[in-house]
Image (cartoon, rainbow, N blue to C red):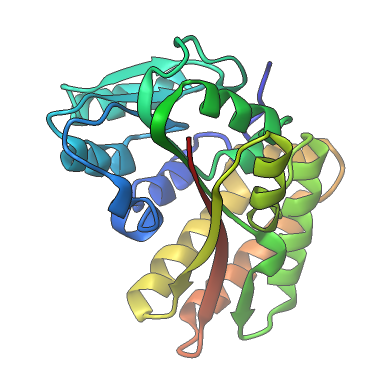
Length: 261
């Protein structure tokens, strides 16, 4: 099943991916990890979370899966003892029960069939293992100061993502998708990212000021007629003003599910 990644893999996108760690992005999963486990990291990207998980399950083996071969080279270089391969989470090329832990971070929101993907993740998870997923919820994002350009950014992103057949407000739906996939014993939780320090504002706001102009998201927004180039430039300037504000604060809520098989 072909999957369109709304953000693409521009440097501005990978800049945010490389910031992610197991501690800031998969804390809900960490108590379940044990040395010797076999772990599949779905949608691993450049592999920063994967590397952390690999250290926690060593000497167990870790496999990273992503649809984009260009980002797997970076992950493989950083973690040569792991296996990295391209693939489709809707049709995993692994035997039933091949892994003890199957993890996906910020993946289900970008899929045409998230419940089907969860069912496939469950299939390749061994009895006694865990399936874990965490996704942001765009409609739940909130910030200060209340800049209209950021309202415009959020509406535009949700429009483009839904045009690709994706669900940007995924966090609140994870439990429903798990239920639809037939998973049982599901524990649903939530956690947040919060950007409020001067360094965080400069990084997060600067990244989005660039991304809204240069990524695949920008290309899709213009080509589909959802925004003009001048609209994107105005949104970018809004992000720059937010980043420069000493009052700047941005919150991203995430839904999480942990399913014991």
